[in-house]
Image (cartoon, rainbow, N blue to C red; front, side, top):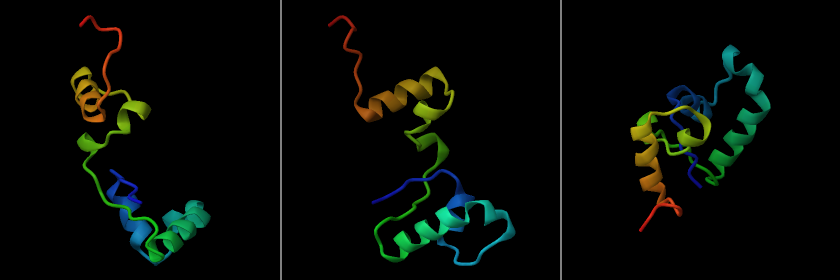
Amino acid sequence: MKLYCDNKAACDIAYNPVQHDRTKHVEIDRHFIKEQLEAKIIAVPHVRSQDQLADILTKAVSSKAFHQVLDKLGMKNIHAPT
């Protein structure tokens, strides 16, 4: 399973086996992710922020970006006249 991430630092922390002071607050989650990465159950590839489809669900995006993502997701306005 691929978990696409637009945060390069988060990707680096996931693949880095060294514990850093700045990652102490995510220690349990990081160990879980590390185990899943080692078992090759998941992968955490980096995706550019402008290509992150989940952003329309979690952030305010421009109208242009919103409609581009809707097209990529294959969503259609069922109320639009045909």
